[in-house]
Length: 226
View (cartoon, rainbow, N blue to C red):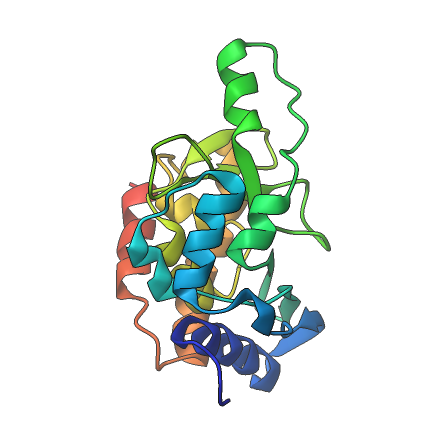
């Protein structure tokens, strides 16, 4: 894959792994067209500053991608296990162009939070309105990531932008994986389905994709089901 950045290569390889697995049924996918006109990582950082007034940390150049859209919806349908996953992301400047999601919130603090959201990842096929957003704030060089889930909760994630893309490549977007990086307990009744699904995922995915290290994700799962 000549001409791809390291992060683009990791994401494309992740999609290839899904497509090549005999147990995974990929219902829809978009490998992403590279937008060459974006330039390099330094040009992206400069344009984010010039166009949106965001002075980003230069370390974000490590996860520079130029895909217009990179997406997948997949399922594992086995007599003993059912798992599904999906994701839809775009390059950083395209994410910044998004209008903030509509906020059905009353407090000024929540209205402000939503006005700073720019949707990074969502689930257009099988999701229930959940999304992950960058929170764009003045003088914050590394934007926070927030997960808006099916229960209308807004959860701060223990991930930055680069770490999110790294985790996406490993988790393959299995539904609910973001809870592994949120301050929640999967023992809560409303999250019971995700407790089982993520437990299954941390059993099945390492067998399907043994070249990845799932140890840190398994430890996060253990922390959230204690």
